[in-house]
Length: 270
Image 1: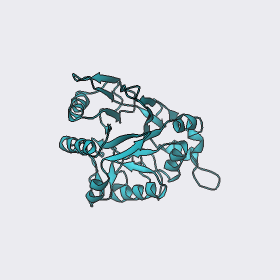
Image 2: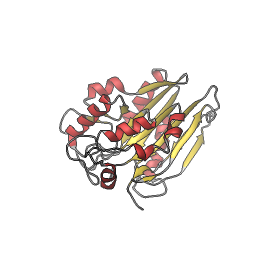
Image 3: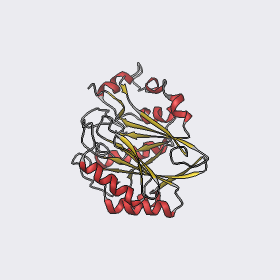
Image 4: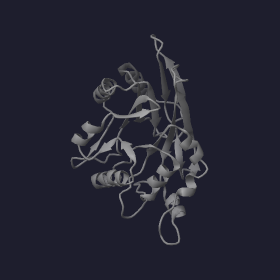
């Protein structure tokens, strides 16, 4: 059905030296290649992805909050893999059933089915009761819902999601994608803190595909995001695992930087 890669799970509390604690879990890119679509097809021409995550659901549900990068539109119509993805609604439904609480949608494939596909994906996730951030119907909706803040085991934690680009596909309607914009990131972090967020997690879709070490641009942006006040940076896009580190700032504050989680599930053989 595909390849399962890294899951990052850690305890907010033990990591940052506070008490009580909350367990957060992050998974990398949830891809949807053609072989995955073909393997999920059932006799009655539906699509069932439940077996993909059955061996991991106990791990995922054991976390207090689990996040995954949904790197495919779910736009209905003809389903397809690379280069222009489009997955059945049963795919995010299976991810939700496996225990994921939040899906990140700002990535380079979110416009594979153009604006209409972005809008249909949002409608799909809303209909399934799945929280999501990174793409929006319009700027008004974006401004009302960013930063997304959840209270997890008593902690107020903010999640913000940005992408470096969308494979050259441009928006033609009022639909909105959160592209990496330093001034916007700075403002969103400030807004999160002003709204009471104790932990701010910035999820960045960045870097160069298949490169095992972070690029200079990743390092530069990480430095900037930390300077703006983020507590965690969780990266995706390169499809391989890149280094992670805990930085200790001059004031003693610790910041977790994960440059790339790699793929969570895909059909990328190498």
